[in-house]
Figure: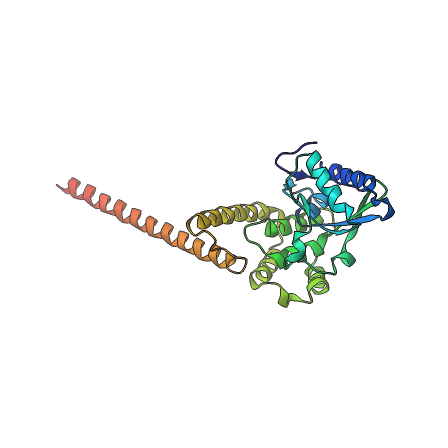
Length: 264
């Protein structure tokens, strides 16, 4: 179960959590039962089948201080990257202190580590709050909606609104672009069909940002990243249009020359 690239899947996630529980107990944590609440990509792969992997595990941790040592020990044992299981997301906009309340039970490992996850409309609400155009946020939303529809448990807009309100107080905390996205995809209803296109767009946006960062190192921030993507894509589209017009002009000129030669 070693992993030099620290890729977590629905198949190995439980193995790593079991190993953490074992180390936690060995280090003396058995006096205080621990709880993890999985969010983000880890919550997606734990609850759904449309996404194959995530590169780290974001979680809320309620445990004795030795939990950090247990996590690091498992990371060393299986050659995982530093921070493979972390709480960094708690410093981001998608965090809400109410996530504990709206999480659902997943599994218990080693009789000491209880794991809960965020799922369904609450995971969608988190993805909308985050709203990153270059990550899996929008494709995850489409995938979650598609799987629940397939299960015969469709998620309604009313349920999403309630989740947004419960976690963040209301839609005013969600960006205008995220609000437009969820309105459009809910109206369209073709979640499975649009998933692939949305994922491809996210990958294109990521490549665009990598290109932009190589030209303007350090210029990208969480505040301007959406505008950079939008403006850069507009520029690309404009250049593509200009190139197309240029090619059309050249082709027309060649056609005129050919007609002149025939006339002669």
